[in-house]
Length: 117
Image 1 (cartoon, rainbow, N blue to C red):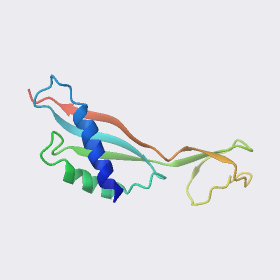
Image 2: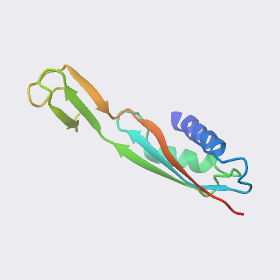
Image 3: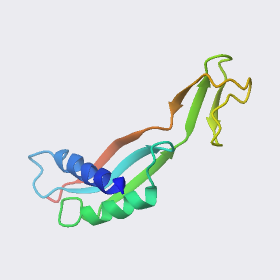
């Protein structure tokens, strides 16, 4: 389950984002973008996140996951579309010559911190 390693890395990044002068600060929310081609199961990632945040400044934090669609661009006819089926052919010209524009992302978009002081 690679989601556990990803959850652990998210926690390390979030902890490192707390400014040194914010004593007692806690992370309230981590906003993440995950592409549909990233092979990440959102429920598994949330489960792992909830396990690894115990006894950290993230304890009780919410992991918000925005799933991004697969968007492709045909190099032959310039058509752009959202891929909804496991078929990577241009629906306009049937070409297999395409670029994947989105769908592989795994990005922390923001971390919300609350200062207890």
